[in-house]
Amino acid sequence: MTETRLRTYTHLTGYGLATLFITMLAVQNFRYGFYDLFYLASGLAALTIIGMGYTAVARRQQLRAPGHRFVMAALNALMLIALFSLQQADISYWCLPVILLNLLILPLRQGLALSLLVTVVLGIFLIGREPLADAALIVFAAIILLSTGALYIWHYDHMTQSAEDLSITDPNTGAHNARFLDETLQKEISRCQATGHPLSVISLALDYVDETRDLHGPAGLTAFYREATQHLFGVIRAGDTLYTLDDGRFFLILPFTPEEGVRVIAERIRRSIGEKDWPVVGRVTISLGCATRSPRDTLADSLRKRTDFALKQAQKRGHDSISFAEGDVIGA
Ligand SMILES: Nc1nc2c(ncn2[C@@H]2O[C@H](COP(=O)(O)OP(=O)(O)OP(=O)(O)O)[C@@H](O)[C@H]2O)c(=O)[nH]1
Image 1: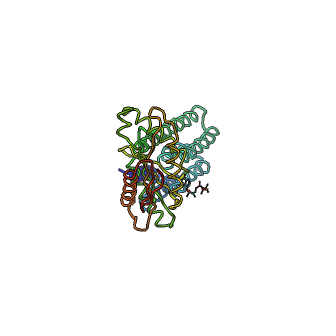
Image 2: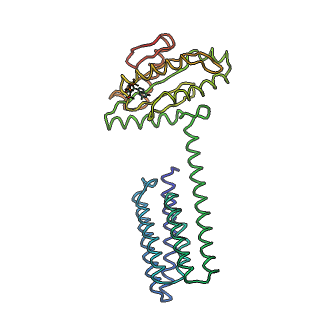
């Protein structure tokens, strides 16, 4: 299940349960003739129903959906205004589920800020009206609810983020992995089609891999890939992204980079890797295949194929060289 769909279900369930609970309160108060509380509950129920409608309408944007902020702000404001204007201590219990609903519906910081505000206002109201022990009990319950809910949601957010990072990161090098490459490259291509900005890519491989593995073992090769990743991160500019592929190749996506630009950066990378004395493996060389997106490259796959072909050309013509998808070669 995607995060967007999960949030849609969570928001619908949260608003749905709140609507059920508040409607029961409305009916109960109507039966006993507490019309003020009946009107208050009806107003709150109307807001939670609006929240459900908004969730359904904006179901594809649930990760951002700014409308929830307004619904929840109105719900909290109505509750606090009623607390002071109706002067009924019973309403203080209604604040408890609202605190939980804030945390469930809003992003953690906003939910926490709103719930803290409700708790503080609730405390001020109760201390002025109720015996201290009763006031302390309700405020304590609100704080327990608030901290448990916030802690749980923080933990969930953290776990989701870690799982997401792990699924797109190569565990050895710390760069992004092949799965994320396809996703990002397709997005970059679509962006270029819309804006007309240039886009270039580089496929990069260590020369004489088998010999290096024989000489220094798989651990030596792994150490080189790790070091080279850090080196490349230092060479490329912000906005460029680096990927390590399963066969030991590196791939670079260079947004806003025209053909002349990719020639500059490719040569810079080739030279800087060749000049460095690497731990374990010592001096090494690399080959690079480069391509700049043409209007024919509407799919990530076609741009990757052209780049891989250019890399093969570079490797065929002698190592320590750069080949461009058009066939130009510079270097050794
Ligand atoms: N994507 C990307 N392009 C680069 C990088 N370095 C150089 N280029 C390209 O090469 C061109 C010339 O780069 P440089 O020789 O460093 O000249 P520059 O005037 O300092 O480059 P910028 O001010 O970064 O545009 C740039 O305009 C870019 O298109 C890099 O790290 N990443």
